[in-house]
Structures are given as C-alpha cells and as structure tokens.
Image (cartoon, one colour):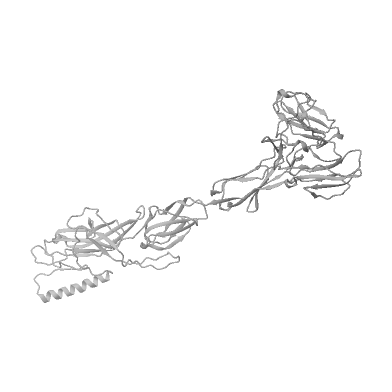
Length: 610
C-alpha cells in the first residue's frame, strides 16, 4: 500500500500550510466553529500502520482497520488541488453528524458528509462513536508523486505518477526508491510496478524539470501487504502403520481485500503427493512405513503470481510390533503316529510388515524352518517335543506359546518272562508269567492266549498252583492304538512259551526255556546234565528260527518298578528329505511300569512312557 508521509513521526509542522494553534482535548461539547483539531501523534509501524496514543490507527486505504474512513475522489494520494478533489467521510453514527478539521482546526463544513475541496491542506473528519479518520493531504505543490489510494497486496500491479501543475511542462522525470535511481526513460511521467512483493515496499519520490526549474516531490511510503501469510503445516510427527494421516496447511488471507481463491500443494521429500487443490488438508486414510519423510506445503494465488512454502514437518511412521502369535497343528492335538506328516501353522493377531518367521524346537539350537508354515514328512520318534514360532518385524520379536508334539510308536517285540526266576518248579507251586514290549507308546493293552484261546488280559498272568491242566503253549498279544481318534491299531505277538506239568504225585521239575519245557524225575546227575544240554540246544535252535533271543528268567518287578529296554529305529532316506523306510525296531526307550503281588483285572492297560 502507499502511505503519504508515513515513516518518520508525523507532526503538524511537516504539513505545508500548517498554522500552529493550541492543542485541545477532543470533547463533543467543544465542537464549535474555530475549534482546533485535537492533534495526536502518528508513528509508522513495520507494516505501514500507525499508532495513535498507543493504539493502532488506520493508515490510508486500509479498509476495515478503523471504522471512520476518509475517501478521496479521484482515488490518488496525495490529492492535488487542480483535480477537483471530493472528500467523503464514512463511519457509524447519524448521517450529517460529521465534524471536519482542516490543518488541525475546526472546519466550517460541519453536518456534511462530503464536499468539494477548494483549498490545499490536511483534512480529517470525525463521526460520533467511530472517532477520527486518518489525515488526507490535498497538495498544491509544483511537483507531486501520486500513488493509488487503496491497499496494495502481493501480486498486484501499481502505477506511480509524477505530476506537475497543469500550466507548466514537466520533463526529464526520474524516479527514486530509498534514494536509488530506478532508471527508465526521462520522458515518461509514470512508473509501473508489476507483481508486487513485500520487498517492493519503500520510500519513493520523483524529480523533474517543471517549466524551467528542477523540482523534487515529497517522499511517499509504499507498503505492500501480504496476500496471505506464510503457511504453517500442522499434523502428527509420529504415528503407527495403519492409522490415518491428516495434514493441514494453515495460511491467513489478508483482511484488506475479500479473500481470493488459493491453491494448496503438498510435498514429501521434494516430491508432490497432493494438489494443487482448493482444500488446505491432505488426508491419507491408511499410512504405511513408506509414508515417513519430511513434508511441506505450498500455497499459491490463483494466477500463480504469489507462492509461499511452509517449513518442513518430519513425519515418522512406526511399525505395529507383532503380537498375538499363535500356533495350529495338523493333526489336531499334536499327536501322530510314527511316519505320519506334521503341519504347523503360525498366525499373528497384530503386526505390520514385512514380517519374518522362524521355527524352533526346545532343546534344539538350529532353526527348523522359515515362513508361516512348517511341514515335517514321515516324522520319527525324535521329532517329539515343544515347538515354537517366532515373528520379527526387524525391530521387535514376539513368540508363540510352545506347542507339544508327540510322536506315537507302535508296539513291537512282545516277550513273555516266566516268574519267579527259579529253574525248578514243583507241581503245586504258584507260577506267574509277565508280558512286556521293547517299544511302544502308551497306552498298551495285553491279551493272554492258552493253546490259542484268550484266557486273560493284563501284563501279568497268574496261574496260581500249577497242575496238569496248566500244561500247553502260552502267548501274549500287546496292542496300542495311535492317532487322534485311535483309528490305527498296532499289535505285537510274543513267541510261544510251552509249559508241561507232570501228573500229581510225580516228583518233577519244571524247566522253562525259550519255548521248550523239560521234566526230570529221578535221573542221575550225568543223565540229567545230558538231558539239559540237549534241551538247551534244541531250545536255542528253535528260538533262533523264530528270530528272537534267549529268554532270561527275571524276578517280577517290585511295586513301582519300571523296566527299561533300548531300541534303535533304523531310517533309510527316500525321495524327500523327510521320507523314511522304517525297519524292525532295534532299540528304543520303553518305560513299562508293573505292580507285584496283586491280580490284574480283565482289560488292564500296561502304562508305557517314551
């Protein structure tokens, strides 16, 4: 905007034609012809506005800054007398209640809102309830620099004109800003300034040859106001993936003119991500890690003449740490038979990617696999254990609750052990047989056969006092059911055990070997030794043909005793890494609890723990 005489403190003596008079305090009852205008000091502010008595005062052309306005026609300032200038006072209050002052004295145009100026001087007006207007100079100087009597904003085009009195020729005109020559053709009396910027503000004047004399105009302060303020970008500096991002580009338009449409653009790390648009907001419904960066916004006028950018706003998008890691297993329950396939799946309730998965088993340091799914084909008994899934996003790690997987082993190598472990059994003595397996997952059930017929169930067969009726062959069948629903049944049949009891009254002895029973009645030592030797050889040959090993008598287990045997499963690699061909079990750990001294009910289950 252009302000006349604004810059240094404005005093009445600075105005041509000023006549000193006593200062009076403005009171409504003192408004009589001849009263002096209540002079108040006006000083320039950094924005081209003044302060009167410590309060901000309206400067020329700042519409809306003060209620009372003094309008000039033609709209140039300072006005020149030879233009037939009309002054109009606008403000609140009753029409026709205007008080006029000229050169700081009461002027005789009271009651009129406007009049035609016929004398040079400084004019101001007063309206009840709205105060004094800014001063307006009507000049009759030989050389005057005029500017439009309106607010000037960024992007405007303005014309400054240097004018001399109409009866004299004006030539050799120069324009100056802040004491520097602006150049231009000497024959031109007007200076056009286009696309004004804030730095276009300054103190302007002109000089020229008026008639035959060089004249210099009074200084005129030109103030260019912001079309809109420098934008400020507001929004969150930190947020998590999946949440919305809302950025607001805040800029205040100038109150000196009706708001003009503005365009908003948004940038991240120098790349435009939104706009140009009429909305001052940028909304990203769901942000990802890639939305992190330095954001700024730019506001521009509709024609692009004025552009302003905000300071950068750093936005950091954090990953949602993984949580709620859980496992599922096929077959359900985590129990499967030897040679079956195991499938484990890992799921995450919360967490943003990229996510990495790893599989672990308790007691095994190596990683079993990666990815959200782990498949083991043809599992062996060494695949039993507690499995766990770990999930990482590169910053934090979450893991599942361990899942127990049990590989169930079919029963194998059932054997019968006679007891008590005495080689001599007299008729009438009690005989107890026990069935056991070398390998097999619990629960294991046992069935006893006498001469091919089922006679009892349970791991122990107590014959009591033997007699001739107990003679015959004995076998036991060990059974276990594997799988979640027990649909797979495995059985192991023991070798036969022959028992022969001589008739009552015969002094006999019961010899039990691996399937051969011998009786001795009154034989000599050498003959008995021969018979035993032949019997042992026959028994060894028969047992060898059955693929077994000689049975060794053992004492029945005491209460709570556990029998351990060791078997190794031999594996051969197939087409896939986990494909195996199961051979006959050689050695494994089997835990066969037994009780002593009590009969077994039918259907007893022999507990087996691997």
